[in-house]
Image (tube, rainbow, N blue to C red; front, side, top):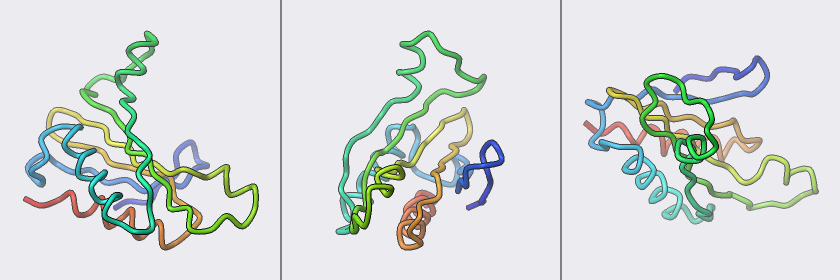
Amino acid sequence: MEQTHFNEKYPVYEARIDKNETTAKSTAEVIERLKAAVEADERTKFIGTFDHLAHTRDLGGEVADGIIGAAHVVFCFGIKLPNARVMAVRPRSIGVTEFDDHFIVNFLEPPMPMATEAMEDWVKALRDA
């Protein structure tokens, strides 16, 4: 996974997964695999999925050329609630953007290293071919 900064401010972890590197053939299949990883982890609670592409189209918004799918799996680690500010960085999500020949899978860096490691593992496990 590559660590970058979106808008020079937000720390993002991102992986490009070519479709020949995974048996997942669609955004929905990648989301289902991530959902299964979330549900299998006793530290996390699955919240839902969000079809970002459908939402943007419903609003009449712009979609970049080449994007054929875009969705999020939403979940929370929530093993501590030490103060009110932690609410600003919860819940977590992993985004999946599909193009003709690859997926981009990314997430905002969480404040807990344990969460970062788990999310990296889930994304890396998408490569199975």
